[in-house]
Length: 182
Image 1 (tube, one colour):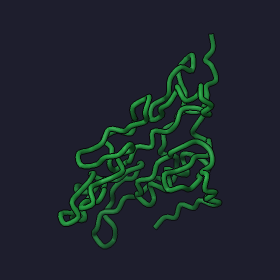
Image 2: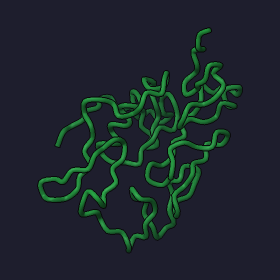
Image 3: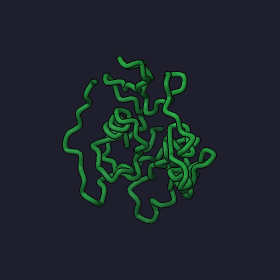
């Protein structure tokens, strides 16, 4: 007995549930291409998966919103969540630095911590048929695939996630993606 060929973001022997970090299996009956990326804030959420019927993410203390990407007006969102603006101090060592999207902390030439991304492979784990699909990111830009989006987010240490499969409605497309080693 073979496995079904599932829609994007859908998994299981009978294609009956969304894979990790995707939600909305019920939306396929309403015309959706497949399950939708959770799009949880890398900085504001405590997990990257979300509630399967609403897409709501689990927020760290102080952050809120469907995707946990919002702080109170007197705070900013950082790698550790929401921090009051007047209490924020930039990290001075790798032990104080939290890197995201597969980056590793190294000390730069000036003695400051810097998040460096792997360049030899895609750090985004294989999630089946969606890994090579065009995706619309939370910055409104269309990326060729999840790997390109993740590499861009890693290089710039941005809170950038996929919000839908396919092209963004605003027409912004990254024509070329270059990962520069600095």
